[in-house]
Figure 1 (cartoon, one colour):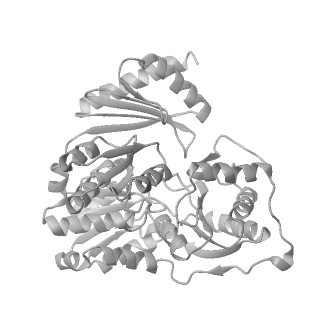
Figure 2: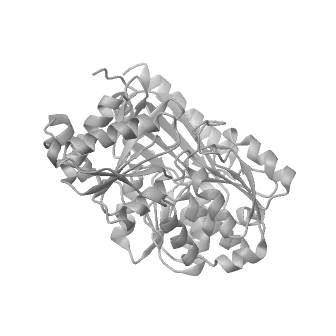
Figure 3: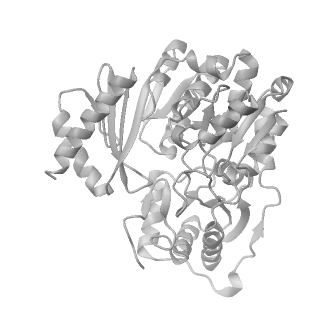
Amino acid sequence: MKATTTLKISISGVRGIIGDSLTPQLAAALAQAFGTYIGGGPILVGRDARRSGIMLSEAVTAGLLSVGGQPVDTGICAIPTFLYLTKAHKAAGGIAVTASHNPKPWNGLKFISRDGLYLTPHQTEEYLDIYHQGEFAYVPAERYKTASAVSDTNEPHLRRILAHFDAAKVRKRHFRVALDCNNGAGAVLAPRLLAEFGCEVVPIYTEPNGEFAHDPEPLPENIAEICRAVRESKADIGFVQDADADRLAVVDERGRPLGEELTLALSARYILSRKKGSVVCNLSTSRVIDDIAAARGVKVFRTKIGEINVVEKLLAVRPRAVIGGEGNGGVIYPDIHPCRDSFTAMAILLEALADTDKPVSALARSLPRYTMLKEKIEGSAESGYRLVGALKKLYEGRGKMDLRDGLKVEFPDHWIHVRPSNTEPVIRVLAEARTPAAARRAIETLKSDISRLQKKL
């Protein structure tokens, strides 16, 4: 089987380029290993809207059947809904076919426990041992289970959100909301959810056909069309989802993208205004979270990058932890379900708008201001770790170091972070400071150091 550097296997699952590193044969083998690891019982199989999703989900179904698994098809299903459904249906586990924010040629598999959570690092290691050994628990044909399907995938998740938030208060405001699902999996539920909140929806790319109209990562440079739509329609807010709808970007009423870091910041500030508790986020999340928490007198716990790392810590410190997430637009609100959930983030922000009676721009302006720059350079995980080792020696004694995930160095007025990506064959390079000029200086200095060290490695 051909293997290339585009295949990424990590705690975020498996991702690769279709027809190159990711094939139906590989998907079937991964499903056989997962079915063996789970040991039987119903296993949900869902997918995002990418065209290759049908091929891979059929391969996954075949793999599960071959080891005695009982596949339950959810069809196109946003990943937060899929996670919630896995637990709600009391399934033994789940396999979601999705590449999240990765570009169109990519797809992947995410592996879910019976708790509706991604496999922990320890569970991932156990599962991958089975896969690499190729010791699958094949069963004879007479023991094959019958595949089935879920009739209404979205209803349980939808009702859970509506029951928790003050939908009546939001409905009274009759918000006009511009919505860009980028023709991804979020298009199945998002318009329905907003309609239930009494919103007038201005739809942009809300057909779940996988024909991405722009790069799936909801960064400001990729969402110019919804910014224009917000202005032209005089919408109160704009929402942008990534391909599997676990991340949410926000556009204010003036048509200006707030930047994905502020999705969690706005959500955390509102939740902390309603209940006291700590916040959990990853190492790359903006310092604005620390400022918000300090204003409420609560703690911030930071973890390695990867949703399951944040979730594990969040659950470990509950009932003191009331919200968590990652600065990529991923909000984790455990009262609904402990996963990144763009639908729950929409509900939080709509209730915040209704409760405060302030426009989005005013809510954003009242937050502490930082500038974060995120760049990436080509490189394998191996080259990334070599680079991190060299940078550690270079920056020794110059700032507060954190080596839990690559290298993060904190200075009084800024921080920098370098780490190999879990999801792409790149090395991520980040810097944050109080002003755009200071952030630019920090990241350019870092990139210059990296370039010099790479010539020696």
